[in-house]
Image 1 (cartoon, rainbow, N blue to C red):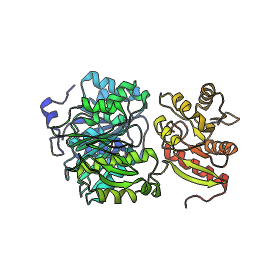
Image 2 (cartoon, helix red, strand yellow):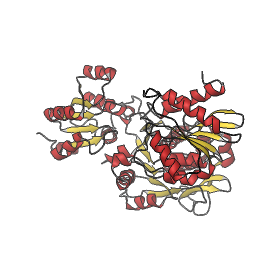
Image 3 (tube, helix red, strand yellow):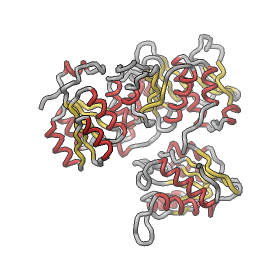
Image 4 (cartoon, rainbow, N blue to C red):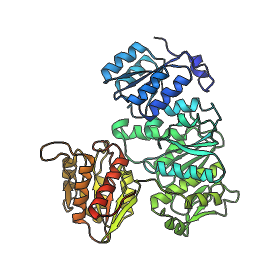
Length: 501
């Protein structure tokens, strides 16, 4: 076994480092894995991709680049991995740390990076952009999009990348380059971080999620904490969550980096917040000790459809990051009022007979579902799916008084419905079976059609029928977007209203 020489490893911090001749493997053939393999091939690295599921088109492209693929179960991959004897492994976010391939790599002393760590090391191919990094259990994508929009409004060339769906490894190869990249980071990606030095960093919130991946809540928190490490200018944090402030205090940041809090109440010095219906900045201007700068009003946010409490918090967090980069308040206001929220995030689908139908399929955990439920007065709640090892009981008990009924979907809908009935016996609960009468698995569309019909039977004028599953979708759908689209189609079919053309 020939491992990377420590002296060579220390040099691998530039696109122009001596990469050629290194043997590397990529675990995963999704968006991140494909981008990593493509970059490794461009750098002249002898590369092989390992994955449990193949992709004919991607494998064909990689073969042209002399990148070979090993598709099979863990046992077959492990045998091939040993034979290949890599010096470096780039791991896609979906691979858990205790995957047999990664356990073997750890025992063998092989260097393992995530795609984000790898991207940081080769970020200077065209132009070395600043990185503004964002994480949180909920709201990451909206905040990343808002931040990038604010930066662009000020004249900077910027883009949201990372967990948002655009690989950082693609962005750093853009021939025109970027001034700044707003990098959305999941806990999976943060787990593998080692040397990234953000210009500014932000933790929006922390709640129990992905415990099946990390193994414990403590490990999940430890992954989130990595985002503050080595921050250069500003660490932005939710001042309403004590755990985040604790993580910030423990972080080893660069000299001169400041802590900037955000919250929905009156801000102290070095914070952003809300005063008499106005979002204000007391974090960055010279007279912040005695005055605040106006950013945008709550009434303006309401007109723009951005006045939900969790969205206001996202606006403040994005503004704090943008201000760290030097964006003027007027540019922030212009960006916010022109912002269009992501689809499947508290998205109205239809309204008929006084009942509002809302798609919040992106609520893939309890924290996100809590935000959506908090914004409605009375609801028929469509929920269920893969809860990723988290406990939904606190969410149920918190909102039980506003629940007209609960419609349960998911491959384990019978088990979930039973739990809901035990915890809240006064609730009306409808279970959507995962199989038809013959025992065949229902399609996602069939599941959602039954859920929507069931919800319509309970909803009264003034209610919101809310799809906020508090769970991942992959047990019955191809992703949260597919789940949300199925919901919209089912609603439009039931109500006889037109969908998007």
